[in-house]
Length: 134
Image: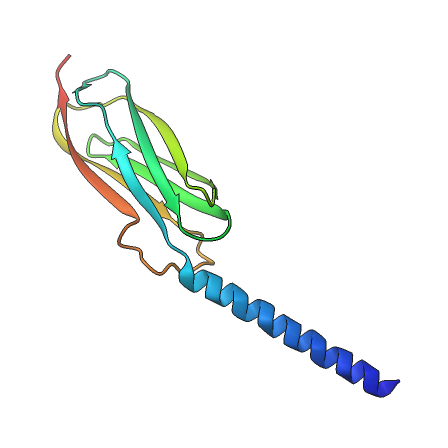
């Protein structure tokens, strides 16, 4: 009977190693990205503008605790943490510019801190926008 217990223990350890290596392989293949930021053609000071942000998840499953941060040089900044679907996601954002003129509009997508991503260069999009007077 003692021999069977050792054998079961070895099987359990092997199974655990396979799971661990599989998780490691998944983390190495992880690639989330900001695919596109769709801003209105005309944006006006103190008027609500609807911005659409298209996110990609090139892994086999949803990823919990991704953080999307959106900021503009007028001082606007918002951040939201959510699960990113394996099919990607469209995010709708309402922005009311507080300053007129040209400025950067920056969108950044970050994976959870527990996961290392293979390509961080596609996690941010910076657009130059011009906010017109009313």
